[in-house]
Image (cartoon, rainbow, N blue to C red; front, side, top):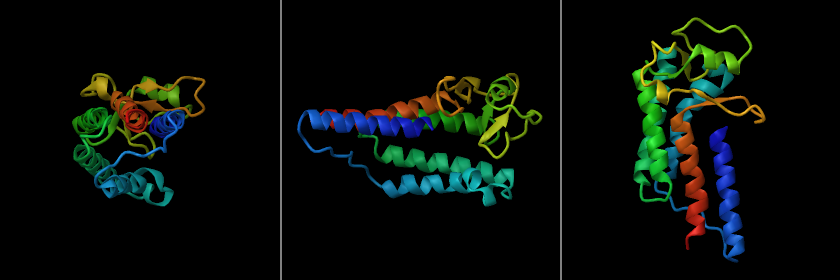
Length: 184
């Protein structure tokens, strides 16, 4: 959700800047955009499509998440020359490290998860529903500072928890769409 908002805000800022200069808005020229689309397919199957996420074994979901992150990192690396992409790369690396270090899923603490959902939590070491998160205590979590630990503000219409990597990716996406358009 934070990425979608960053993209929308970046587009608005980029278009507004172009309008102020009385120029057409030109999106950034990206190499291999198909790779970014392909990278989301494993996540769609593992976490978002109800029919597949309910039957997909955790090992496959984990492999899909890691594959998705690696493909996204490849896309970002191919476009590292584009403004904002270095932030996206840093965020993707942070998320990938946290996921790999914690068994293939993004760690979330029971305290953070309890603030996010009202239903009873599964036991630690288990996936949080069909999400990409695994419930781990602080002692069990490797690279805790890269885990899903930041709740979006109460006033935000969608309750979600994000990682430092997610923040960097969102900032990079905003920069990519807004900054690139502001420099001509």
